[in-house]
Amino acid sequence: MIHLRHAGKTFGNAVALHPTDLEIPSHKTTVLIGTSGSGKSTILRLISGLIEPTTGSVEINGEKLTRQTLPEIRRRMGYVIQSGDLFPHLTARQNVLLVAKELRLPSHEIAARLEELCALTKLSNDLLDHYPLELSGGEQRRVSLMRALMLKPDILLLDEPMGALDPMVRAGLITDLKSLFERLNTTVLLVTHDLVEAARLGDHIVLLKSGRIVQQGSFAEFSLYPAEPFVCQFFDAQLEGVPS
Image 1 (cartoon, rainbow, N blue to C red):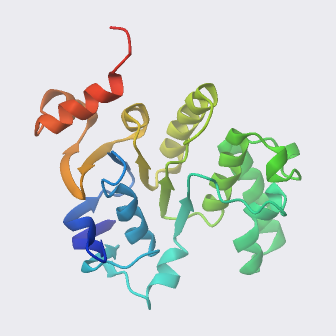
Image 2: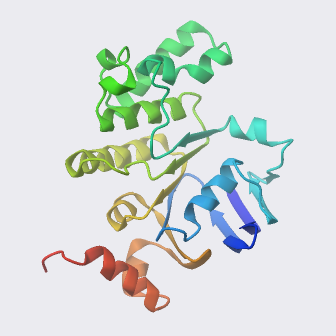
């Protein structure tokens, strides 16, 4: 589905991502994990076309991502960022339907999809006419997810979707996302720094450090066969302070 071929990114003299080869498997949830500045969000932005690689290329379904191909490829992507990025002057319904209205999709098609998305994300229809500030953090994330899924994308990109949420809300959202990903059967790429999110949601996990891939595989492989000491250090740091 998605290939990075020797793709790298620099900003001036700063290296955000060293030349990297990475394959994102189709119909699976891949989680990019690592500390701040490790390059995980850079990969997500390269794939979404928000930034261009300094070296190498990004391919989606065998098609190279360029300025010319980006508009059509992006229509097949859904993107959710940490803040949710909802327009505060629009209701939840208006936020979800922004692109659908712009594309002038039939009203009956829009209504049916909206009802389907409410069921998928477990968001009450009653909340659709509320403004973002009238919604809880978890509800805002669900609205952002609905907007990203409106056009039935082939690829869903999520950048720290559960950041700054209350622990109880976050735990519930992780459970719901796991179920949602299984039902959608789409290609999901999720960025997080949290090991619990990676373990619960990821079929394939990619650990980065200083703009390079350290190890990738299943969660069990990380635990049983760490590629280098940093893998153990990263795991231990996440578990620090947790009673044994």
